[in-house]
Length: 215
Image (tube, rainbow, N blue to C red; front, side, top):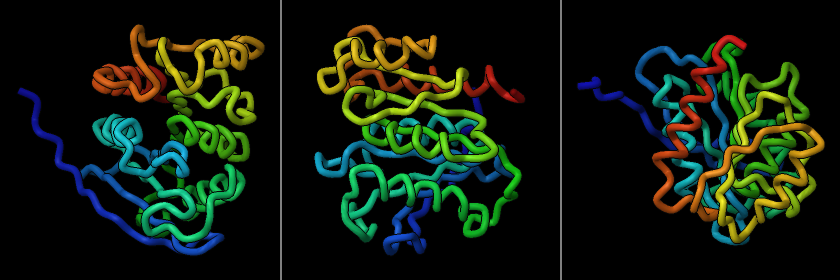
C-alpha cells in the first residue's frame, strides 16, 4: 500500500492591497517542491476557496509535494474589500504570489504553479500573463472564455473542460483556444462543476505536472 501523505492545513490572514486576505494553506510535511496558487469561482454566485473543484486542484498539487495556497477573493469569507470584476482580484492574487515565500518561510526560488476554476481561471490566467519569470504550470478548469476577456496563455498550459458545461459553453472555449492552437482536454459527460468527475480531474492535473517536470 502507498504510505499516507501527511499534510498540514491552516488558515491565515495576510495584508493585501485592499485589506486582509484570507488564505487556506495545505503543505506536505516534507520540504516542498513548489508553490501552487489556486483561484476559486465567482464570488457573487457563491464561489469560495471551499469550492470542491478548487479544493481538488489543491489536493492534486499537495499530493505531488507542493504547498498550495487558496485565497478567498475580495469580500469572501474573512477577506476584506469588495468584488472588483477581476481587476482587484488579480492584483490580490499577484500580491499573494509575491509575498508567499515570506509568510510561508519557503525558498523564493521554488517553482510556481497557477490554477483556477471558472472565474478563478480568469484571475489565474491574467496573473500568469503578468508574472516574470512565467509560472512553471498553468491549469485552467472550466476556463472562463466568453464570460471574461481571457488572455492567451502559454503553449504548455493545461485546459480542462466539461463536455456538457452549462455555464461556459465548450464552443466558447474552443473559439478562444483555436487561434492559439491550444489543446483542450474534454471530460465526456462532465458538467461545469465536474460532479462525479473530481477524481478524474485530479488525476489529469497530477499526470500533467509530473509529465512537465523540469521544463
